[in-house]
Image 1 (cartoon, rainbow, N blue to C red):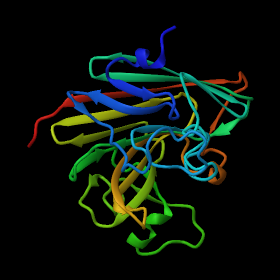
Image 2: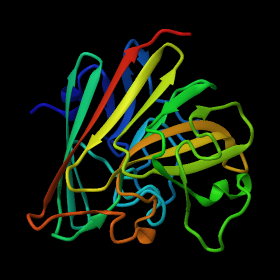
Image 3: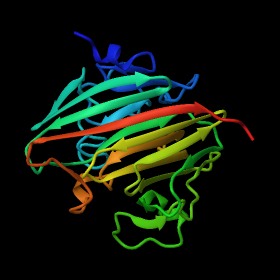
Length: 271
């Protein structure tokens, strides 16, 4: 039997005891995944409250809400994992400076969910995030203090990318943290120092977006640190409970749904 780690090749390292978390992504001659702030050691199996370990967590069936960051990060996962009525399988293929993760979900027809590849990247201040200009971007309430006004009880407000906050730049530590969803945006690139990483999600017939988390030492309040999340997503909202009829992925009548995440990198010249 070929293990998931062996199938991932040299570009990706997986911790099957810690939610199948990607602990390393090595492309274009460098490491792309950020290691967390050392909040714990060892797997998070059995924990009820999410702890940020860095790397890439698989969030399913929601990102925010209940359970926080989904229900996979706190259980072992070697290729296949079960959550309630759902069975999720992941398989890797790799090539030169490219990794593809293929997913297959078996669940009851009509099963609604949000999935995200919660990738926290090891980027320096000044890294640039590229997405199509004018893409609808949902800003979440932690951005309220940075905007002129926030509607009462609104789960998010919308603006065109790059929004009034200029989310293209991962800036210096200014005490802010902003979460956003680039709606119907399957591809985002991040240029950091001398390389560029591109993440592309494909799932025909389902809402495909990219979530962002730009934490410039604004979270958590009691002990803030820095982190940059670029998170390919099935759905258009962080919280499944707040997702509208068209904001979540839905398992079709066949009881099976497949999607593919492709991550590639290339060197770039420094201007």
